[in-house]
Length: 320
Image (cartoon, rainbow, N blue to C red):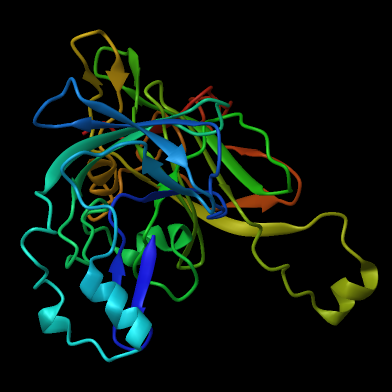
């Protein structure tokens, strides 16, 4: 959540509010999440997050942390006076609560999204930088950002493979796997699957623990037809796309009570800066998976071919 102290001078993130959006279209997720904050210092203390509209979720109780703007900021809003950013942190000592470190865990009760988790430090009111995303390359997360933006005040929730959608969307799915030296296959758990049109990332998806990934995104603009093609009409609409897979072999974490947790959100996005892992066209050679056509209204399934050029059940990645 972003609060304007003075529209022309300063913006700060309100304490105690987290915002979740759908990674496929950046629409706010307003209901049906099971979201908790686990106190890192006292892990038996758990605060449940509750929806407050527009995708904002707040803890039902967070002790020892400020959840309101200080009187100084409120007076500034009322008086419409300019704000000197160097004085923002100088609140009365009795107002400022001690910082708290939490692990946030989110699961979707309707099965639309994969689970996510991340570290969240209840900030000092003067802080405006949120480190949950880490520092991924902007070009590779372009589909997760609003047009023209280079920052975000939300956490995108990645789609679960096979989910249904209320509106038509482009869908690119795959079971991501690696064939090992002994001939056995293992899933490429928690790999990122990126879809590009030209040099633009139009969709980004996450594989689950079993390697199942689906990227969903708004369809690109319709291709421009030549006058001759326009006169003849078109049987179907297609876009030429390329895919990249980013895989650092991240591991799940198992809690003391046996619950399996995904890698942290920052670690997932930290797979993006390095070179992509080669996706294979054919299991018997190292030729990269080629550009392919996305057809309007059809789900595209990516598969590697076997030695007879027959599609396998998985999209295989080059073994490191």
